[in-house]
Image (cartoon, rainbow, N blue to C red; front, side, top):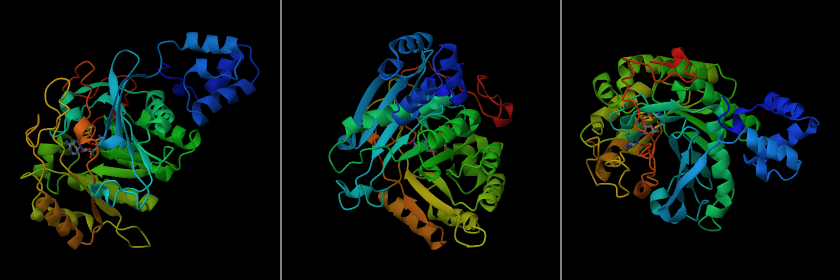
Length: 409
Ligand code: SAH
Ligand code: SF4
């Protein structure tokens, strides 16, 4: 099913053009509009004959993403977009702009990725993994996105970027893509990998500019080890013992920490690439220095073959309160959101960070972006879409559209 023009690959475009009785070079022009100009609207493809434009827009009417809402935060350095999908569901994408070194408007961003324009994209409407601290997880799963729907988020944000720059210090083009929006990328592997390859081969992004974040689906990590495209892998660990992780990340009951780390170790051996571990710090739940030391002991033995350097990098995310009530509040409560978790104190973050660092494992604290517009990690949800199903990952798989049963926990 074609849900976006980005669901069409080179062969599909050639067939489409042939069917319309047009010469083959029209397919290359179409691909140029889609991938280089990042323009999915056939009516805007001005070097195509009017008849072909009309034919395409008629044929693909009702496909593609509709921008329903745009919100700016952090003085224009963060932007959140709500895209309506064909069929009525909605997903969110977030653009984060980072000034070049020496031009930071805010000390909080110190150590952040300089001179980057990163888009955070969604792979599913909702999420079936049910992580107890995550707004998307609490909302439930609605459906998988297609390859084209994932890619089109990048295209749309990328073409809006030049107009959204808060000033001349901001980057003028998209530099990075992170699969960290709504959904679990490895629960929708075909769309995730299909999109990653298109972004690399079509959009020309380097594989190292692409990061896929997983809640820890072991079959997905094992597959990532065999994919030739060397994208970055991020694993959401959030706890160093199974009892705590079971509470936060229900999928831990299917793939506990030891199995997860086995898969990561094999991934590192096969790829010789480093892996980042995301750890959302929640007050009184997982922010004790003893837990940091335990995390350090778990991750310090992970080494890059031959060089012997640390293969793990810990990325601490101070917990973002999740939006309250339907529609989400744009005012993030200081503590205790929907989920009952609260952010750690600054002192707790510092102590935790120091304890991880003492184990030798590289560690950083992620700057909090987009909190005021509920665009920070874990604050995305389809408030504007239909409510999803609250599937327990162990009990039942997420939906059926294109899902590979192997992907399900
Ligand atoms: N499903 C994938 C990717 C999307 S979530 C995954 O879980 O990795 C992106 C990151 O935000 C994950 O590390 C997730 O655990 C984290 N996150 C979710 N809710 C959060 C919250 N309320 N505060 C801080 N981080 C959160
Ligand atoms: Fe899904 Fe990731 Fe949220 Fe867990 S943290 S519910 S896997 S989006």
